[in-house]
Length: 193
Image 1: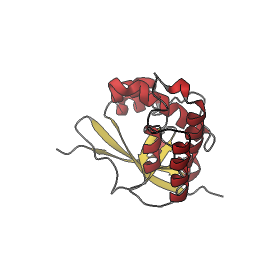
Image 2: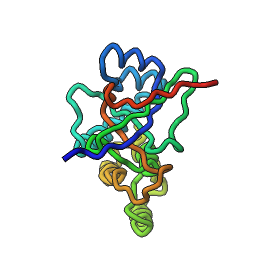
Image 3: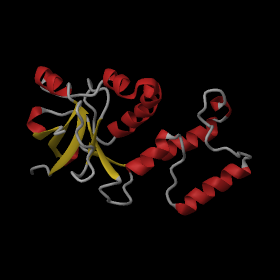
């Protein structure tokens, strides 16, 4: 039975065109992360490592892939090309896509607990108050993190909910894939000025 194909859009550095031609595949490396995120690259790498491990349990990561490729699920919500970037319009087997909730991803980026619903959010806040925590934003700070192993574990265990899509909304749902191969590319959108 044929796999369902899905269109995705991803904005990448214009130099990716050369990488794709040279390697016959486009993959995101630590070098890409360092260039894109500059002074916060170490922080991004840390949360991406969690994401990679969790995403690999949903769609197997090829052994030589370092990072996922972030994609929009709609043309309306895609990142537009800039002078230094292009947008790949790709067609992907749905079995290769890792969908996630971008609002919940913000919780991961901020090292916060992802509640299952509003009642769970209220219960979490109450639990933190009972434990005497006035600041739920500092459990991961380097200078104090060692005091909060239980809290950090609880938060990290909640992050798997990033893959629970509660609202199928093109502005909220995003997708990841592990690589782009030439046969996946339907179009390349260049900056028009």
